[in-house]
Every structure is written in C-alpha cells, then in structure tokens.
Length: 93
Image (cartoon, rainbow, N blue to C red; front, side):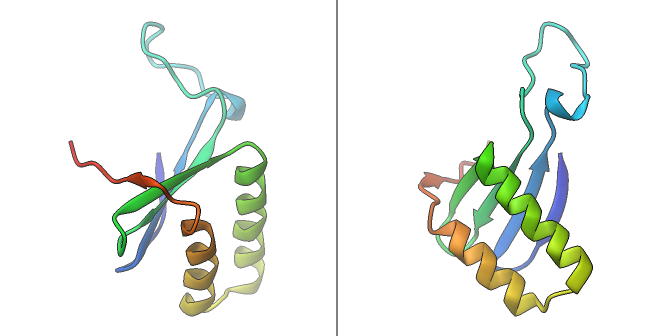
C-alpha cells in the first residue's frame, strides 16, 4: 500500500496486486489479484475502491498530474468527482 495523497478532505491509497508482479509474502494469506485505488472522502466518512477500468482511468489522471503539476484545488475537484461514487463507510479497526 502506498499513500499517494492526503489532505484535510481526501486521502488516496494505491493498493498493489499480483498484476504488478507482486507475490504473496505468505502463500496462505490472500492477495489482491489486481491493483486498485482507495479514495476516502473525509467529509462524508465514506470510501470508494477503484479497480479495473476505473483504476486505469484514475491512473491516467495521476500521469497527467505528474506532467502538469495541478493545483490542490484541481486535484480536490477531481477527487470529489470520484468520491460521488463512495458508498462504503470508513470503518476503523
């Protein structure tokens, strides 16, 4: 897991999977088959997990941000669009 972004409003984590060449540390512990991104909307206390084509679309945003250095407002606006998909409440263990 890698923290990609963290602000007062959002956090974004990249969860790596076997599709990125990772092998499970222990064979008896399940591992994600595909990578994905978790976006947490701290205002609503909800999160969304993006995988598959959604993850690829989000990864395209990340590449564009690396090239164009967007403002924090532009990043937050993009994350707010994805956060509209969030339905899962964040649960602290």
